[in-house]
Amino acid sequence: MKIYDFLIIGAGSAGCCMAYFLNKEGKSVALVDREGIAGGASGAAGAFLSPLPGQKNIYNSLVNDALNFSLDFYKALLAEAVDAKGVLRVTNDNFAQDKLAQNNIKYDYFDTQKLKNISDDFMNIDGYFYKNAAVIEPVQICKKLTEESDFYKKDIKELSFKDGFYIVDEIKAKNIILAQGVGKSLVEIPYMKISPIFGLRIDVKTTTKIPFNIHKSISISTNKQDGTVSVGATHERHDSTKMECISTCEKCAFYENSDQSQVQTLLKQADELIKLKDLEIVKIYKGARATIQSYFPVIGKAVDYEGSLEKYPSIKNGTKIPQESLKYYPNLYVINALGSRGFVFGPYLAKILTQNILHNEPIQKDIATQKLFYKMARK
Ligand SMILES: Cc1cc2nc3c(=O)[nH]c(=O)nc-3n(C[C@H](O)[C@H](O)[C@H](O)COP(=O)(O)OP(=O)(O)OC[C@H]3O[C@@H](n4cnc5c(N)ncnc54)[C@H](O)[C@@H]3O)c2cc1C
Image (cartoon, rainbow, N blue to C red; front, side):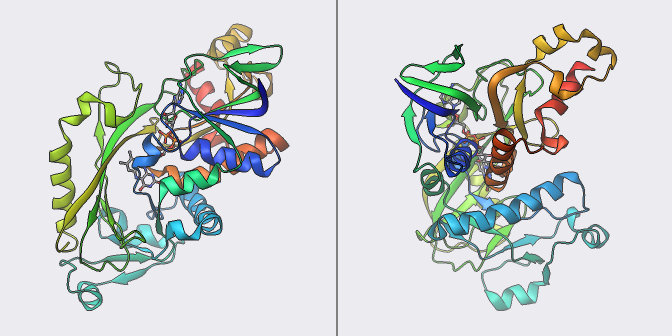
């Protein structure tokens, strides 16, 4: 039996980024996934990285801070998996001048004529160009992140904790990180209610030269280094109360039926932005984004909900109990609810969580497990 400092369950953007930062701190890591590396939502992602403009608030500040960190991080990690040519955000309600003025992200306005001068294939659109944006190759990135970890392909059904160690078959670990995306959590975390938002994206071949990523309700990438262009993604809510996500969307019968109509929707929306000549669909990807109601991601030590309320029943009536006094699952942490921005948030949040676990550095309260715990307990 091999003993590790950390066992990470889920090898998507969240789990792979955690593996990377823990390895960099000299920790040994076993990474487990039932599908393989980037076999869940992370393998389906575009994966576009772009700023969130609009009136400055806590959420878009978090996104934009994460973007700045993560883009530099990926370029240093694996430059050949990053196409950083910027993004044109085509005008919509979020771009009212007064909202933009309150946000410090730099942009250039491109009117229709300017876009036509760049390429005849642009439709009659205008928009705001942001330099700080990219499209990355998600599977290559995830594989690179995990080079120093041991990977095991396993479907973990339960956790057992004995004498200070978690034991899963031949793996023994002092600490656990749950990075399960939409998978059923291996411990009860009722305050982090994950809803899946399913999506489909396609890779196409086209003779059109696309100078930068284009985003309106969907995104079209620039011509990537492998010669394809990503177009995505759709957003579909499935009723997960009737059907638990136990595998990937590729294997989900319920999802299959809507493939063709979703591809048509994507192509129709793409057609309103730029003419994609000699179009050929190369591959369809499907996955489920994990979100919570507020759309914020969640990281931190997992609070034992029932145990904490049993210890301090008056929390329900609003008594303030400091977070250090709550009851926690031993050495067990979560990183989840990365939503539609898993590759923007991944490295940034993994760095913060690693610093928190190993060096006790604080986590911003908006994304901390404790915030959700108190919210539910006091309801
Ligand atoms: C179509 C689509 C397009 C997207 N486009 C973008 C984009 O352009 N930019 C962007 O930043 N984000 C995008 N996203 C979102 C992004 O993909 C997700 O936010 C991100 O992948 C989440 O990563 P994760 O590691 O939390 O989850 P996942 O990648 O889903 O990883 C969780 C893993 O846990 C494994 N697992 C769960 N339970 C168990 C268990 N019990 N035992 C073993 N393994 C288990 C699963 O097999 C899975 O591989 C997109 C998502 C989709 C679906």
